[in-house]
Length: 244
Length: 244
Image (cartoon, rainbow over all chains, first blue to last red; front, side, top):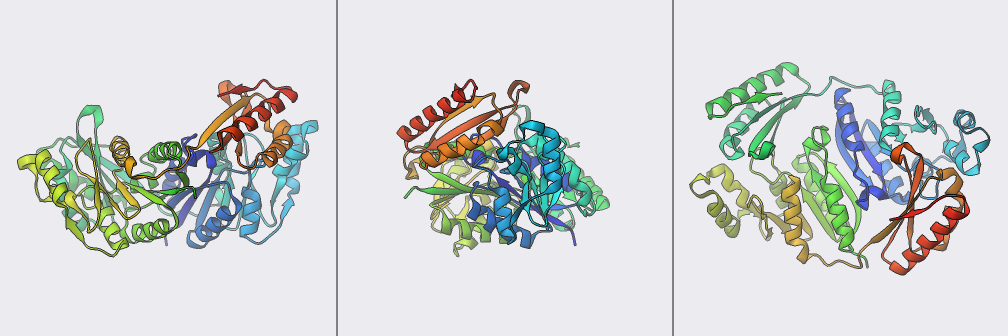
């Protein structure tokens, strides 16, 4: 079985359009490299009932769930409380998290900042090499910060806990032919290489209409054969294929 | 009742990490301006069963659903077929869509390109001012292209069909104080202004740690009062507030 994942972006700032999400793309790339298939991503508000329901649903259907956002200590940070509720456990002050915060803040560790040490009972911390306030893992759910630099550092510190599969690889064949010329032959090739997912994406590089054909999967030999067949098809139809 | 929306990004290219989604942010901003509350966004693969199930769920729970992606005519474009299945109707060749394609392509309108005229029975076309292949609306679901320029042009051409509410407005107060100094007073202010959603976002502008406090809602007078109170709080705590 290929391990699977879902991403849950907890963020009013994304749903308001104020902030451009970049966490989905980072996690998507890294999960592919680790051989974990990303099945879906969701963006939901910082509201406890919505986080509880979504975490329960995703945790039940995917090998791993990664949440980002809402793990600070201001009134709008509700992720830790929601995760505790999702797994029917109370929040507790984690001694190691408290020690990290004491070392980082010293005398400036007030009651508000100390709330960052609250995690659901049974959670395992996730290291935060940047701003020290840890994320955590509870069962198959990894709870990460929303700030992209911090999220990325946390993901890299936890990746040893993930059991991946064969890395998902891809090649891209670009050409200046329009999709309308390629569509039927491409559908035929997709039928011939069922283990390779062939995607067709119109592009407007340098103002010129063209198409990027993406061959994706875990079987390197099949991808190589499919890529060769796509290159031959493009040439036969009068295009100049560029392989990346 | 405030009208609500969900966004459904249909895109293997987003889930593979190959492409950075920018459609969520565009739609989020525009929906807010139109007074439509964006409740959630999802990214799912170009697979019929997953599209069918997700469209049914979202259409039942939100005033409007906007899908992007998968409306071309290559083998990996499955949105139109999935929408037909989601609403239990067959696909049919829409005469107006066919006429648009005939005008645009002339003699180059082959069988593959002609598939772009297939829409679910009962669907109303959505204009595509850029590349002519139309999107469509079926019940409360708007089916748009995935390419950002085309998606945006389609959205602007359909927005007259949407019933919005009061525009969602926001102000931002930025300052160089850390969240740990502000958290408790901010929670108090959130309690005093329940009609305003107050968000606290740590920032690292110009390499300096600070925070952006965002006041958001549809009641302009309440937002103005809350903003004034937040500015006074920041000054009292020794910060220099900048209001946007």
